[in-house]
Length: 273
Length: 273
DNA sequence: CCTCGAGTTCAGTATAACCGAACGCCGCGA
DNA sequence: TCGCGGCGTTCGGTTATACTGAACTCGAGG
Image 1 (cartoon, rainbow over the protein chains, first blue to last red):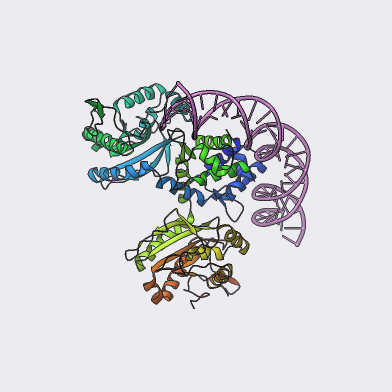
Image 2: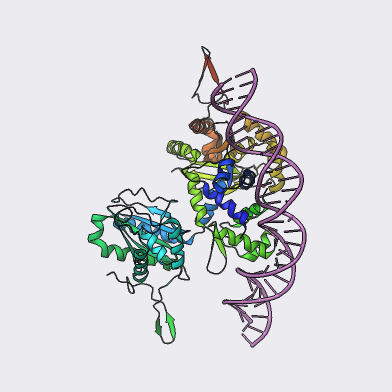
């Protein structure tokens, strides 16, 4: 691993909405490296356009990052496939849907469409991160990670509690992730915010790997009466996106030696309990 | 300068909408470095989330870039200040406005709002780059760069010709930039596409540096009759954004020893010819 | 079954990154 | 007005680091 590049990436990650501007001394202190080293990193990153210098010798994120991000979005089959499905979901239910991916153990929200009947969800926002153990999308994504990496990240970040329903022990988490993996969807039953529930399902790429998760967020009083229908809706929507990405459920039917794919069927393998 | 970080940034810049996926060998060939070096770069960048591995050992841009870009946009005073002004501009004229910055000698479009009477401009798009010598925003941005850097970039990229009106010689460019700097705005008179014109003006930050440019793009047959009004409109809009960023025109008025700022006046210093 | 091309690994060597100290600059307070 | 403190910046010797090219593994295609 190239340590210099690691340092550079660490520098980039320092820049947050809370502190979008850093000086040499601050960076040096944050990364615990000598000032001259921090200086070299900042200068180089700025020369490459990943950072920009402000007038007073401090640094902010650079427009090249914006350009790269647009390239990513342009070429992202995931977003292209998910957006129309999410729009239909919002149109049908009037609730809010999220699309999220996992980035080093945390949930990163990639897209968010709000319905007209939806309540304003402040916590989640496009480009924002949240811990993974407490949301529907987070549990779906964790459930399809190797258990050791889940343990590792729990060891680092811990299981922060938001509501009485938040999962706080490793044993609870293990059971929940096992259940989520088996049934093919996850619920968030007021685990991150009282009164807010959601149902989430995994999205797979052509090779079957879970690369994202989709959810419908619903107020608790509308969630519990409609849990069944919500479940089939989100699972079906996620499966449709997966199919768009080239993934087909592994239920092959053999007819005269040539196998064919079954492209539909609501919840054939994983029916809600 | 840290060469390793430079290499890493070069790797990131390889990823384009045209080729959003790269393998080790391809990167090694593109950067003219041995395979093992390219391998180390890609692995490290992927471990840091700036890239992601696809199933087949190739690489795409990573979601961390999306996150960083969102942080940039969130904390960008420029966009926050410019967006409402651009919306009013579009509402009033029904034409398309662009907001652009300069990133290593090229124009990067940061925001684009289309009016209802506007023609579809395919070339410009949010997150896309174009050469700077042929567009209104480009000439505005170049005009406020040191002339040596302009020369350097011309030496590298050349002055590509798009239409008969495109500037193609250094002498033309020097004169035009001088004029643009003096009068405080630039025109694009069918220099990038026949039938398409625009008027552009600079946006300055608190210290007076030109950090962006704004433009109104108009079909030629609507541009020439309305050039005066278009000019005042875009210059005024850009000045309003600059003021929002903390910049005030250097026309001080002295009253009883205490100086006060003059915040308005359409085109006091730079009247259209 | 063989080949080709891809990604990956490894160990020696040259070099590029690291470091601490010293410099110049600006703003703040005396 | 002067002096101080903190900042970003520069510099050259030392060491650890990144570079290199050859060898290895794996899969796809013929």
